[in-house]
Image 1: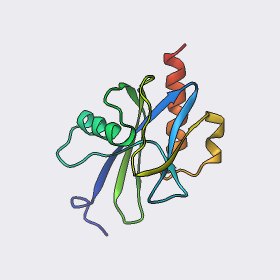
Image 2: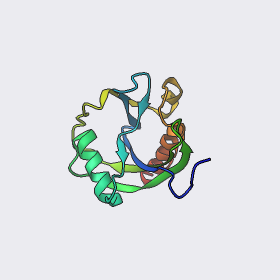
Image 3: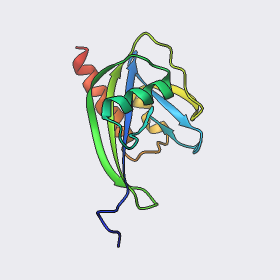
Image 4: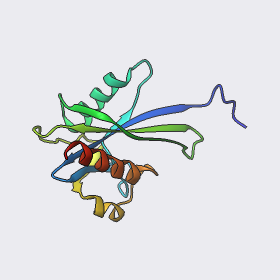
Length: 141
């Protein structure tokens, strides 16, 4: 049994970016059969906003975006026994071109109805995206 005080715990943040009623998803380089949302883990010593801004720059080439709020979070264990807390944030950036990093092979803009056509790395990605669409639709009424 692992010692809970010494257990590895990873906090990772993802962005739900919706444009024209489609959400951006990205195909992973290290696991090419999986798709994910842009984002990544908070490094030791980083604060939420600094880490999230760094990840958006690294993965989308965004210098500016509007953070519209957390839409979902969930925790789970990965096969190596580490605990993960995944946080999905709805963001807005309608003007900048998305330029993906080397961490991704491809990107797609998908509707909510198309989500079941994709195999996501995170177990709760579809739920995160659906809740992102809900908040997006409430904001844009």
